[in-house]
Image (tube, one colour):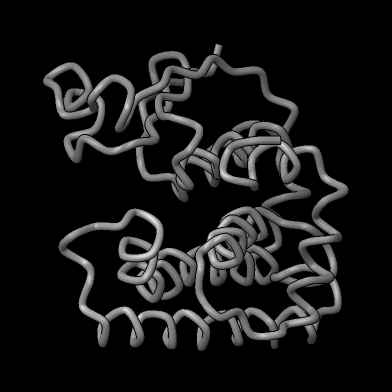
Length: 207
């Protein structure tokens, strides 16, 4: 049985849970992270030296890093419809997965920690304003891409890339800041509402 270590409220754990739903995979989940068992232990660090969730155990195979995990699951469990074998289509999917991790996440980090987590170390008004503006700039990139495809982030079909992108959009929508009017994003999230994985795991880990 596939084991997923990490609490459902973690955006990166929800990537894995949603992917499992799309693939029809059964799994056992153990709650690790703030409010549950601490990953900063010798036991957990033996699995992930970074002491971060998620981690999966698939038999004797252990893997960490959420985007690596979802790619592995799609490759291991016949997820070609999510993660195409064709190198051109796969590269387009990878492009948006990597962009979400390297660019979009970096844009919203300060604003999210300030406005949602209320971190005392992230209360500089200028930095909050800058982060919000940068976040909106990146969301405009998503809006333009969705307007171009008229469907999903990497093209006309739902793919693995839609999972991290939709989770980031949800985080943007639920953060108390000024939200620009992005009709393609609104239509996209409505479209995704037809999917069980979205309904269960995209809204901060609650149905």
